[in-house]
Amino acid sequence: MPVVQELREGRVPVKVYTGEIEPQAREQLVNISRLPIVHHHVAAMPDVHLGIGATVGSVIPTVKAIIPAAVGVDIGCGMMAARLSLTGNDLDESSLKRVFSEIERRVPVGFNQHRDARSAAVKPFQEGLKSILDKHPSVERRIGKHSSWAHQMGTLGGGNHFIELCLDESSRAWVMLHSGSRGIGNAIGSYFIELAKKDASRNNLHLPDADLAYFREGAQHFDDYVEAVGWAQDYAAANRHEMMDEVLEALHRHLPPFEVTGAAVNCHHNYVERERHFGETVWLTRKGAIRAGKGELGIIPGSMGARSYIVRGKGNAESFHSCAHGAGRKMSRNAAKKCFSVEDLKRQTQGVICRVDAGVLDEIPGAYKDIDTVMANQSDLVEVVHTLKQVLCVKG
Image (cartoon, rainbow, N blue to C red; front, side, top):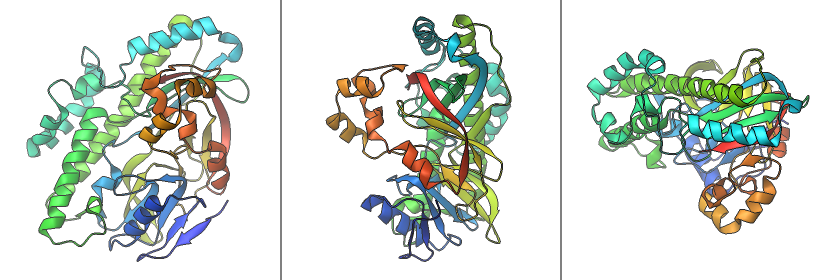
């Protein structure tokens, strides 16, 4: 489906791939479109919903400037998926329950972390982080005395992060997981968001929203932010690789022998990258969106009870070669807890081995938009390669 509507209240248009936008999210999109640094237009994906400053599900091209709050604090958050030689015939409820317990034992979730540092995985990141902390030592203090970036490598985190074992349309097994740059990414993101706000105040920038404060190229902290955000994005991708290794080891312990077939897909959906669009080299921020360049593979998850998709990008120029990053929330976490019961969660996740308790009630499928509608609205952006349905889900 092509662009459904255009908002023309700002300096540039907002091209929206859905007819349903909550009023506050619509206001955020218009606010972004009013910024003098935005190039050509803003694109809003079919899963668009309210965020902090910038809307989740927005793609923002900026000229010689970056908005740290648009990138957010879960820098480099994204997805990884790998297809296995196993099929549905190799899986039974008993073995899946053992796999579930093994994954929970191997991959710390929530605020938990590994007892030992992941030495081999973190070694490539030590020098880069030292460079960042030498210039901005308070970043380290923000992580907290009970956590360590080296011990958090290969951990899931909380919220909507998850690890799933799925079956595709041909009953072939896939491992799929969702996580980002953990505590260190949050510390980097929140630190530079505050610096950008201070710079905006000092420079008397008149912003429609304080969370849209930005660094211009050549400004005091611009290069430092580019260095730090790039480091966190690389850390997030490595974190997913480390987790994938742990999950595969868990499967090897309790399932028949198997191999990973083909290359894994690993894609960010909260990040900033230097790209060229509509005749201009820009800093392109995808906040809750993945790159969908022509022929590129991506991952679009549904909720913990719905289908997910492996897709191939069509390289659509109007979306800045982007597509949705998932189903997108249709209600807040607090609203979900008030609206649904544990019995509702049990019913909506029937057939999936997962937690069914009040601690994950805010992640109930009913709190999310319909993934099939999201996919229909972006048929001009991607084509479906595989359709996945989870049989096991470990939540953060």
